[in-house]
Length: 295
Ligand SMILES: Nc1nc2c(c(=O)[nH]1)N[C@@H](CN(C=O)c1ccc(C(=O)N[C@@H](CCC(=O)O)C(=O)O)cc1)CN2
Image (cartoon, rainbow, N blue to C red; front, side, top):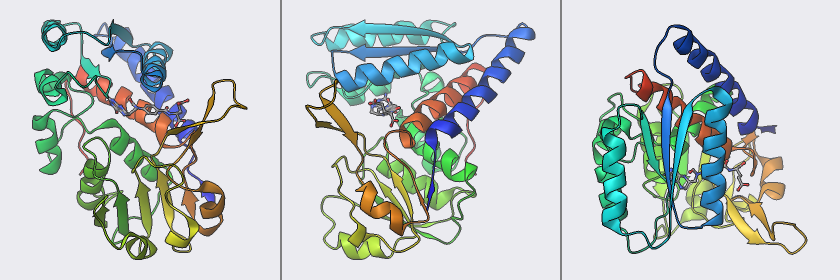
């Protein structure tokens, strides 16, 4: 069994981007600029946004963090997005999810200029991805593809089972695994809460992408010998022995699944850091006016 080390690969991607940014600056070109919007005090969201802002600084990007109170009105939030859309210095805009219940997430995403939508959530960018056109690819699915590519995991003709059909991960990664070339060209089964024979389906999988948001959901009896396991779950589980009061658990029961598989992502240090690296790649592409071609 080999670990798919997202921390290591993300650091390598960040180093490549830092070199490219230095080249842009030396040529008198624009420094990439990411604007992040954070609403409320969700602890996990604070961690992720802080990590995005820190990573920008590490590789020489400019970043702006707009923090708003939980009670911000939808109109006020949309006005701020419009201002960022019109700010020529800002290349990429992201609104950290989830948003408070009184705010219409769809409306917020639809308000972001598609050419600055580095999360790849705008329907126009989703449509392009589904059509196989160059676009911004959502960061977590993009990060998973970059990780599979780095480790040269064979995917052509393999059966990939994706557990979870969210707009952020499950649905887009199933499209990428089936459509893209290398990695890609998989036969994909997309499973979700209404799937009745999940264990039987998982046992046929060469690759499992677990993105269901339930700690330790995938157990050894669901995994075929030699399968590749990608664990997207980052579940905070109460643990009084930790200073933070919680520990992170993936969607996969790592200790019992790892001995059975060929490759596995750890939690933390697997898909999470790749999400940040992929976002930074999208932001670089936004700054130079390019899109990502997954074909
Ligand atoms: N606007 C967005 N919101 C959300 C996205 C997204 O892509 N765009 N995805 C997730 C959260 N997410 C990115 O924002 C994210 C999740 C996890 C990590 C990460 O680095 N995880 C670390 C552990 C960090 C910790 O201590 O908790 C790891 O796995 O090693 C980065 C980004 C939902 N919202």
